[in-house]
Image 1 (spheres, rainbow, N blue to C red):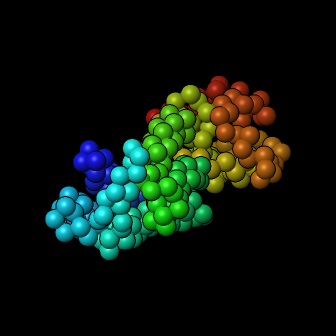
Image 2: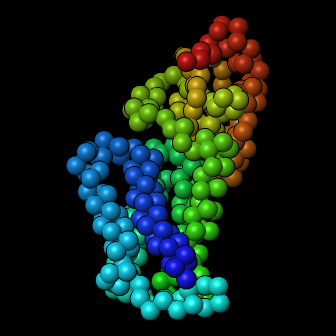
Image 3: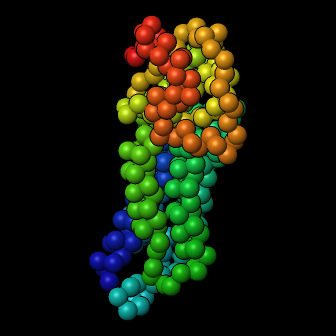
Length: 268
């Protein structure tokens, strides 16, 4: 039984660390890194460190768990008052982070809708698992948090390569590229369009907001080079995902040839 109690204690301690890291990640994801001064970083970690101390010293005070009882190959226990304290801070950190990401996702100038949705959806399993555990809706001695955190980690790992989740653009992009009169197409490493600035959106009538970029192509002063192509409905915007710049500009072959001939496509 001591071995099982050890792993339960380790799980609770790691959960406090993971929730704090998730909260810090959401601050970076939503461009609030300037808010993270050394003093505020310390404040963020005060509660998790305190909670870890509560968990590690539970065998002295039994405020977190008590009355450990073997149930088959599991160990059931009764929740103490401090357990609800741990659960409350778990929800505060995770829900605050999710709300910040959700606000960024629906903002008028956000570039991170698809990535933000990934972050929000991936945060749901730990919230659901924690709620079921706190309300004792799962069999005694079973915790869903480890598996839910595993799901979240695998989702982020997949998004890292598929959606370039952590390859974020500088915050200055909103004030620089968004206000450019030149059309800008943002591409990933494979040449797929993942973002258009307002000038390009107006020109192409294709609103396709994606996030993360390893390079971008500027098409200077082409607004008058040709007429705009056919518009795209909201339901058709997803057709741009994964498409190459040749496909996007291919609807205007004369424009594409003109850009290539005049070397108007510049990479940096």
